[in-house]
Amino acid sequence: MNLLITGCCGHIGSYVAENVHKIKKIKKTILVDNIKSNRFCSLFNLKKKNNLKFYLIDVDKKNSLAKFKNIHYVIHCASMTNAEKSFGKEKDMYKNNIKCLENVIDFCKKNKSKLIHLSSTSVYGKQAKIVDETCEKKYLKPQSPYAEIKIIEERMLNKMDKKIKYNTYRFGTITGVSKGIRFHTAVNKFCLNAAINENINVYKTAINQYRPYLSLRDAFKVIQFSIEKDFFKNDIYNALSGNYTVNQIIEKIRKRKRNLKIKLVNSEIMNQLSYHVSCKKLNKEGLYLNNKIDKDINDTLNLLNNI
Image (cartoon, rainbow, N blue to C red):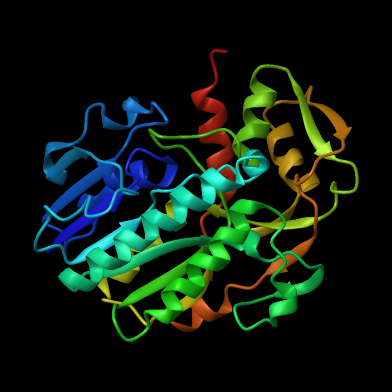
Protein backbone atom coordinates (compact mmCIF):
# COMPACT_ATOMS: atom_id res chain seq x y z
CA MET A 1 0.00 0.00 0.00
CA ASN A 2 1.07 3.60 -0.61
CA LEU A 3 1.38 6.51 1.80
CA LEU A 4 1.55 10.28 1.28
CA ILE A 5 3.06 12.57 3.94
CA THR A 6 2.44 16.31 3.66
CA GLY A 7 4.85 18.54 5.56
CA CYS A 8 7.45 15.77 5.41
CA CYS A 9 10.35 18.05 6.38
CA GLY A 10 8.86 19.06 9.71
CA HIS A 11 9.60 17.67 13.16
CA ILE A 12 6.97 14.90 13.00
CA GLY A 13 6.89 14.34 9.23
CA SER A 14 10.64 13.79 8.98
CA TYR A 15 10.58 11.28 11.84
CA VAL A 16 7.79 9.30 10.18
CA ALA A 17 9.68 9.31 6.84
CA GLU A 18 12.82 7.98 8.55
CA ASN A 19 10.90 5.18 10.27
CA VAL A 20 8.20 4.32 7.75
CA HIS A 21 9.94 1.04 6.86
CA LYS A 22 8.69 -0.24 10.23
CA ILE A 23 5.11 -0.12 8.91
CA LYS A 24 5.07 -3.36 6.95
CA LYS A 25 1.92 -2.52 4.96
CA ILE A 26 3.56 0.51 3.33
CA LYS A 27 5.52 -0.28 0.17
CA LYS A 28 5.90 3.24 -1.25
CA THR A 29 5.86 6.69 0.38
CA ILE A 30 5.35 10.05 -1.33
CA LEU A 31 6.90 12.99 0.53
CA VAL A 32 5.55 16.52 -0.01
CA ASP A 33 6.81 19.82 1.39
CA ASN A 34 7.27 23.42 0.24
CA ILE A 35 10.50 23.73 2.28
CA LYS A 36 9.66 27.32 3.26
CA SER A 37 11.12 26.37 6.63
CA ASN A 38 14.47 25.75 4.86
CA ARG A 39 14.80 22.38 6.57
CA PHE A 40 16.54 20.76 3.59
CA CYS A 41 18.44 18.64 6.11
CA SER A 42 15.26 16.54 6.51
CA LEU A 43 15.96 15.16 3.03
CA PHE A 44 19.60 14.25 3.63
CA ASN A 45 20.60 10.57 3.50
CA LEU A 46 17.08 9.17 3.23
CA LYS A 47 17.09 5.39 3.48
CA LYS A 48 16.67 3.57 0.17
CA LYS A 49 14.78 0.74 1.83
CA ASN A 50 12.00 3.19 2.72
CA ASN A 51 11.15 3.65 -0.99
CA LEU A 52 10.63 7.40 -0.61
CA LYS A 53 10.06 9.95 -3.36
CA PHE A 54 10.09 13.69 -2.64
CA TYR A 55 8.08 16.44 -4.39
CA LEU A 56 8.45 20.18 -3.84
CA ILE A 57 4.80 21.24 -3.54
CA ASP A 58 2.72 23.91 -1.80
CA VAL A 59 -0.23 21.97 -0.41
CA ASP A 60 -2.24 25.18 0.02
CA LYS A 61 -2.53 25.44 -3.78
CA LYS A 62 -5.69 23.92 -5.27
CA ASN A 63 -5.16 20.55 -7.00
CA SER A 64 -1.55 20.55 -5.81
CA LEU A 65 -1.81 16.81 -5.04
CA ALA A 66 -3.79 15.85 -8.15
CA LYS A 67 -0.84 14.07 -9.83
CA PHE A 68 -0.73 11.35 -7.15
CA LYS A 69 -2.80 8.22 -7.67
CA ASN A 70 -3.35 5.00 -5.79
CA ILE A 71 -2.63 6.56 -2.38
CA HIS A 72 -4.17 4.52 0.43
CA TYR A 73 -3.19 6.67 3.43
CA VAL A 74 -2.39 10.34 3.99
CA ILE A 75 -0.62 11.77 7.04
CA HIS A 76 -1.28 15.51 7.06
CA CYS A 77 1.53 17.42 8.78
CA ALA A 78 1.69 20.46 6.48
CA SER A 79 0.84 23.56 8.47
CA MET A 80 2.27 26.60 10.20
CA THR A 81 2.77 25.35 13.75
CA ASN A 82 4.46 27.83 16.08
CA ALA A 83 1.68 28.65 18.57
CA GLU A 84 3.57 31.34 20.48
CA LYS A 85 4.60 33.12 17.26
CA SER A 86 1.09 32.81 15.78
CA PHE A 87 0.04 36.09 17.44
CA GLY A 88 0.17 38.80 14.81
CA LYS A 89 0.23 36.21 12.02
CA GLU A 90 -3.35 35.04 12.43
CA LYS A 91 -4.44 35.91 8.89
CA ASP A 92 -1.54 34.08 7.22
CA MET A 93 -1.87 31.07 9.49
CA TYR A 94 -5.65 30.76 9.00
CA LYS A 95 -5.31 31.06 5.22
CA ASN A 96 -2.44 28.58 4.95
CA ASN A 97 -3.59 25.89 7.38
CA ILE A 98 -7.27 25.87 6.40
CA LYS A 99 -6.43 25.83 2.67
CA CYS A 100 -4.00 22.96 3.18
CA LEU A 101 -6.60 20.85 4.96
CA GLU A 102 -9.31 21.70 2.40
CA ASN A 103 -7.04 20.43 -0.39
CA VAL A 104 -6.08 17.30 1.54
CA ILE A 105 -9.74 16.52 2.25
CA ASP A 106 -10.58 17.02 -1.42
CA PHE A 107 -7.74 14.66 -2.39
CA CYS A 108 -8.88 12.00 0.09
CA LYS A 109 -12.47 12.20 -1.16
CA LYS A 110 -11.45 11.76 -4.81
CA ASN A 111 -8.96 8.96 -4.12
CA LYS A 112 -10.72 7.23 -1.19
CA SER A 113 -7.55 7.74 0.84
CA LYS A 114 -7.72 7.38 4.62
CA LEU A 115 -6.51 10.41 6.55
CA ILE A 116 -4.47 10.79 9.72
CA HIS A 117 -5.10 14.37 10.84
CA LEU A 118 -2.90 15.91 13.52
CA SER A 119 -4.52 18.28 15.98
CA SER A 120 -3.20 19.44 19.35
CA THR A 121 -4.00 19.20 23.05
CA SER A 122 -3.56 22.98 23.05
CA VAL A 123 -7.25 23.12 22.07
CA TYR A 124 -7.94 22.56 25.78
CA GLY A 125 -7.70 25.86 27.54
CA LYS A 126 -9.75 25.87 30.73
CA GLN A 127 -8.35 24.82 34.08
CA ALA A 128 -9.71 21.49 35.21
CA LYS A 129 -8.40 18.43 37.02
CA ILE A 130 -8.59 16.38 33.83
CA VAL A 131 -9.92 16.89 30.31
CA ASP A 132 -10.77 14.35 27.63
CA GLU A 133 -12.28 14.17 24.15
CA THR A 134 -15.86 14.24 25.49
CA CYS A 135 -15.44 17.45 27.49
CA GLU A 136 -17.97 20.23 27.09
CA LYS A 137 -17.30 22.98 24.59
CA LYS A 138 -16.68 25.40 27.45
CA TYR A 139 -13.44 23.48 28.15
CA LEU A 140 -12.25 24.07 24.60
CA LYS A 141 -10.71 27.48 25.14
CA PRO A 142 -7.71 27.68 22.80
CA GLN A 143 -5.21 30.31 23.88
CA SER A 144 -3.56 30.95 20.51
CA PRO A 145 -4.57 31.38 16.84
CA TYR A 146 -2.81 28.07 16.12
CA ALA A 147 -5.05 26.22 18.59
CA GLU A 148 -8.17 28.03 17.34
CA ILE A 149 -7.39 26.80 13.83
CA LYS A 150 -7.08 23.23 15.10
CA ILE A 151 -10.66 23.46 16.43
CA ILE A 152 -11.83 24.70 13.02
CA GLU A 153 -10.00 21.84 11.29
CA GLU A 154 -11.64 19.27 13.58
CA ARG A 155 -15.06 20.69 12.76
CA MET A 156 -14.28 20.66 9.04
CA LEU A 157 -13.55 16.94 9.26
CA ASN A 158 -16.64 16.28 11.32
CA LYS A 159 -18.71 17.67 8.44
CA MET A 160 -16.99 15.19 6.12
CA ASP A 161 -17.97 12.26 8.34
CA LYS A 162 -19.68 10.25 5.59
CA LYS A 163 -17.34 11.26 2.76
CA ILE A 164 -13.90 10.19 3.99
CA LYS A 165 -12.35 7.88 6.58
CA TYR A 166 -10.11 9.61 9.08
CA ASN A 167 -8.89 9.92 12.64
CA THR A 168 -7.90 13.16 14.38
CA TYR A 169 -5.19 12.86 17.00
CA ARG A 170 -4.74 15.64 19.53
CA PHE A 171 -1.00 15.39 20.08
CA GLY A 172 0.66 16.63 23.25
CA THR A 173 3.68 18.92 22.96
CA ILE A 174 6.24 16.94 20.95
CA THR A 175 9.56 15.88 22.45
CA GLY A 176 12.46 14.07 20.83
CA VAL A 177 14.95 14.28 17.99
CA SER A 178 14.25 14.12 14.27
CA LYS A 179 15.96 15.51 11.16
CA GLY A 180 13.37 18.30 11.12
CA ILE A 181 13.65 19.08 14.84
CA ARG A 182 12.41 22.49 15.93
CA PHE A 183 13.12 24.40 19.11
CA HIS A 184 10.02 26.52 19.67
CA THR A 185 8.20 23.93 21.81
CA ALA A 186 8.78 23.72 25.54
CA VAL A 187 11.07 20.72 26.11
CA ASN A 188 13.26 21.22 23.04
CA LYS A 189 13.50 24.94 23.69
CA PHE A 190 14.50 24.36 27.33
CA CYS A 191 17.15 21.84 26.23
CA LEU A 192 18.61 24.36 23.78
CA ASN A 193 18.60 27.08 26.45
CA ALA A 194 20.40 24.73 28.85
CA ALA A 195 22.97 23.69 26.23
CA ILE A 196 24.02 27.27 25.45
CA ASN A 197 23.75 28.49 29.06
CA GLU A 198 20.82 30.79 28.40
CA ASN A 199 18.02 31.50 30.83
CA ILE A 200 15.04 29.14 30.69
CA ASN A 201 12.10 31.53 30.57
CA VAL A 202 9.06 30.33 32.51
CA TYR A 203 5.73 32.11 32.82
CA LYS A 204 5.48 33.46 36.37
CA THR A 205 2.55 31.32 37.52
CA ALA A 206 3.46 28.25 35.47
CA ILE A 207 6.18 26.48 37.38
CA ASN A 208 3.81 23.91 38.94
CA GLN A 209 1.21 23.78 36.18
CA TYR A 210 0.62 20.55 34.26
CA ARG A 211 0.68 20.17 30.51
CA PRO A 212 0.62 17.08 28.20
CA TYR A 213 3.73 15.93 26.30
CA LEU A 214 4.18 13.35 23.55
CA SER A 215 7.40 11.56 22.65
CA LEU A 216 8.09 11.37 18.91
CA ARG A 217 8.43 7.61 19.39
CA ASP A 218 4.87 7.49 20.70
CA ALA A 219 3.65 9.80 17.92
CA PHE A 220 5.00 7.29 15.41
CA LYS A 221 3.42 4.46 17.41
CA VAL A 222 0.01 6.13 16.96
CA ILE A 223 0.52 6.42 13.19
CA GLN A 224 1.82 2.85 12.88
CA PHE A 225 -1.14 1.52 14.88
CA SER A 226 -3.64 3.40 12.69
CA ILE A 227 -2.24 2.00 9.45
CA GLU A 228 -1.41 -1.53 10.56
CA LYS A 229 -4.78 -2.01 12.28
CA ASP A 230 -6.63 0.02 9.62
CA PHE A 231 -7.94 2.01 12.57
CA PHE A 232 -10.05 4.87 11.21
CA LYS A 233 -13.22 5.64 13.17
CA ASN A 234 -13.87 9.25 12.14
CA ASP A 235 -13.23 10.28 15.72
CA ILE A 236 -10.91 12.35 17.93
CA TYR A 237 -8.29 10.81 20.23
CA ASN A 238 -5.85 12.41 22.67
CA ALA A 239 -2.29 11.15 22.33
CA LEU A 240 0.29 11.83 25.03
CA SER A 241 3.17 10.13 26.80
CA GLY A 242 2.45 11.89 30.08
CA ASN A 243 1.37 15.02 31.93
CA TYR A 244 4.19 16.98 33.57
CA THR A 245 4.68 20.29 35.31
CA VAL A 246 7.20 22.79 34.01
CA ASN A 247 9.20 22.17 37.17
CA GLN A 248 9.27 18.41 36.51
CA ILE A 249 10.56 19.04 32.98
CA ILE A 250 13.25 21.38 34.30
CA GLU A 251 14.34 18.83 36.92
CA LYS A 252 14.69 16.18 34.21
CA ILE A 253 17.00 18.53 32.29
CA ARG A 254 18.84 19.48 35.48
CA LYS A 255 20.04 15.87 35.85
CA ARG A 256 22.32 16.59 32.88
CA LYS A 257 22.71 20.36 33.17
CA ARG A 258 23.09 21.22 36.84
CA ASN A 259 23.72 24.95 36.40
CA LEU A 260 20.33 25.79 34.88
CA LYS A 261 19.24 29.40 35.09
CA ILE A 262 15.49 30.00 35.42
CA LYS A 263 13.92 33.38 34.66
CA LEU A 264 10.27 34.12 35.44
CA VAL A 265 8.64 36.12 32.65
CA ASN A 266 5.34 37.41 31.31
CA SER A 267 4.05 35.91 28.05
CA GLU A 268 0.89 35.87 25.97
CA ILE A 269 0.86 32.09 25.84
CA MET A 270 3.76 30.25 27.50
CA ASN A 271 2.38 27.59 29.90
CA GLN A 272 -0.64 29.73 30.67
CA LEU A 273 -2.97 27.07 32.08
CA SER A 274 -2.73 23.87 34.07
CA TYR A 275 -4.61 20.73 33.13
CA HIS A 276 -4.22 16.97 32.85
CA VAL A 277 -5.21 15.36 29.55
CA SER A 278 -6.61 11.83 29.54
CA CYS A 279 -5.44 9.18 27.06
CA LYS A 280 -7.95 6.54 28.21
CA LYS A 281 -9.98 6.64 25.01
CA LEU A 282 -6.96 5.53 22.99
CA ASN A 283 -6.08 2.96 25.67
CA LYS A 284 -9.51 1.38 25.22
CA GLU A 285 -8.64 0.77 21.56
CA GLY A 286 -5.63 -1.26 22.68
CA LEU A 287 -2.93 1.38 22.23
CA TYR A 288 -0.81 2.44 25.20
CA LEU A 289 1.77 5.21 24.93
CA ASN A 290 4.52 4.77 27.50
CA ASN A 291 7.79 6.05 26.05
CA LYS A 292 9.70 8.12 28.61
CA ILE A 293 10.41 11.72 27.67
CA ASP A 294 13.58 11.45 29.80
CA LYS A 295 15.14 9.64 26.83
CA ASP A 296 13.99 12.40 24.48
CA ILE A 297 15.59 14.99 26.76
CA ASN A 298 18.86 13.02 26.83
CA ASP A 299 18.79 12.57 23.03
CA THR A 300 18.21 16.29 22.52
CA LEU A 301 20.98 17.29 24.94
CA ASN A 302 23.31 14.77 23.24
CA LEU A 303 22.52 16.41 19.90
CA LEU A 304 23.70 19.70 21.42
CA ASN A 305 26.52 18.16 23.43
CA ASN A 306 29.44 19.98 21.78
CA ILE A 307 27.99 23.48 22.06
